[in-house]
Image 1 (cartoon, rainbow, N blue to C red):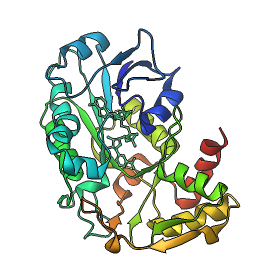
Image 2: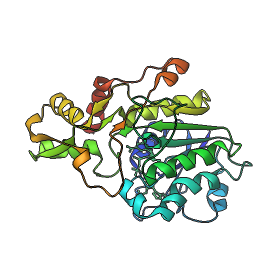
Image 3: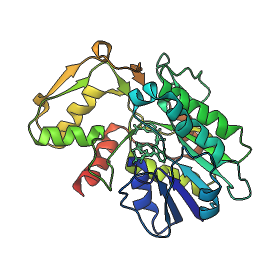
Image 4: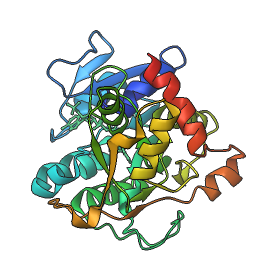
Length: 292
Ligand SMILES: NC(=O)c1ccc[n+]([C@@H]2O[C@H](COP(=O)([O-])OP(=O)(O)OC[C@H]3O[C@@H](n4cnc5c(N)ncnc54)[C@H](OP(=O)(O)O)[C@@H]3O)[C@@H](O)[C@H]2O)c1
C-alpha cells in the first residue's frame, strides 16, 4: 500500500515512520530546509502551494495520512491566512485528485471543542475558541465533504520527536527535571493524553481494518498538566518538588485556551474492541520513547 505521509519531520509522523517503515510503501513530504529525510521517497513540498498536482503525481497514494499542520496555537492566531492554508485548505487540495487518492486519514484535535462538556464525544457540539481549533475544524469539514473515504481522528498527543531534539511537553518536562530546573505546569487544565507510540498503533489499525468516519482516539484518564508532571516525575524517579502548580486562567497567551481538553473515547473502544491506555499505560510508553 502506497502511503503519502505529510508532516514527515513532525512529532507524530516521526513515530509513524519508524513503526511503518517495513509495513507500508511510504512517501514522505515535509517543508523543512534541513530535513533528515532524503532520497527518491522524500519530497520537500510547501503545503501553502496553490497546486498539489506535483505532490500527488509523485506519490500516487493509495492513502494519505495527513499529519502536517501549524500546531503553534499563538502563531495560528497571529498568522491566520497562513494557518488556514496549511491546516484547512490543504485538506481540500489533497482530496481533489480522486484518480490517485483512494482514502485519507486526517489528524485533528481536541481544540475543536470549547471545554464546556467534560468528555465530548464524536457527536458533541464543536465550538473552537481559538483560530488553531477553527482551522482544524474547517479541515474536518473539507475532508468529510470531499467524497473520498476518510477517517478523521481527534486526539491529544504527548510524545517525542524521534528524529530531532525538540521541546515537546514530555521532552521539556524530562530534560528540565533531569537538569534539576524548576518548572510550572497548569493545575487547572485537564486533558486525556495518548502517547505518540500508542497513537501510531491505533492509526495502523484504523488503516488496516478500514475504519472510516470520525473517531476520538486519546487516553482514558483526564488529568491536569500539573498532575501529569507529578506522576511523570514519580514514574521516572525525578524530583517532583521541582514542579510548581500554575494556573492557565492567570496566563497571558495571545490565543485563548480551553481549561478542559479531555475527549470521550467510548465509541472507539466499543466499536473496535481495542482498549486505550489509562495514564499508567501512557507512562510505560514513555519509558521506551525516552530510553532511545
Ligand atoms: N501534538 C499535539 O498535542 C496534538 C494534539 C492534537 C492534534 N494534533 C495534530 O496532530 C498532527 C501532528 O501533530 P505533531 O504534534 O506531530 O505536530 P508537529 O510536530 O508540529 O508537526 C507538524 C509538521 O507539519 C509541518 N508543516 C507546517 N507547515 C507546513 C507547510 N507549510 N508545508 C509542509 N509542512 C508543514 C511542520 O514542518 P516543520 O517541521 O518545518 O515545522 C511539522 O513537521 C497535527 O495535524 C496536529 O494538528 C497534535
